[in-house]
Image: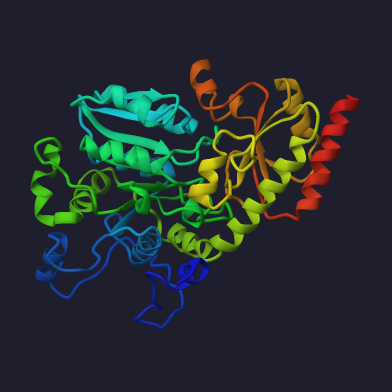
Length: 411
């Protein structure tokens, strides 16, 4: 099946009980069973079924299966937010004394998370470029994961995923990829060597900015060395499902960061139009980037522009598309703020992946807790504006940015 057909039909069938074409919202806490023997089997993973919505829920289960199929994984676990998904993906394999190697150009919230993990004895080493030359010298016996955003937000750097995954596997380390900004529309990271894929599904999967959620997809390909990853010893019997079994029966289940059924339903609806939206969003982003790139006093960063250092990777990995985010530099914080205030259509908001175009000043918001070095590594400067493209008519957006910049010059 091609992409849009797959969104509607892969990993999904109508509700068996009612024939509903969408899995209904099972907005309940617990599920009744005919006997304690049946419930005992469900609790002990000896029979399929649902017991309590913190552990599993039919609406959430349907969403997980659809994303797993779309990402070519063997299974998925949904979480209450994208940050919860990032956290759980790591804590499922890490413990005190372990180390992570990660790209420095991460989303500000993820950088803050890695700082929090230090309190638990987990250390993150950052590389300015997620490439083999910078990663390999940092690998030690304590290195238990390599983590990267496939398209950095907002640095817009692209990981050469095949080379990095080859290096990681040569050292027996899993590669965890946050593919939120790439989406399955641009690439299936598992097919290029990723072991675990994470999404903030609040973004492009949802598409309407109406539900917070995250999801973790396991490839089932990584061979967990139980001497090195000692927490997997009791899960070795699950074979390629060891990571998912440990996650569901351990950290994720006990922390309680489950996805609400209503949010799973809204994300399932959004998922079905992701292909159509991403086609429009990527097209709009390229057109606006090309338009702004010709304006004096505005510096544009977008991976699908020939001047980008990641242009060749955008061509080879994403078929020439650069995603739905671009950044511009306006010359100063004051000019950036005035430009944003002059815009009429884009909304000043912190999300990405909405149907509406959104703008934000990252340095004073999502990177407000980051050091100056961390900001620079993430491509965040005092004059940076991040633009999350919407599906508006591109001529209207170009005209709006034109008048906002013209007014800036007049001021």
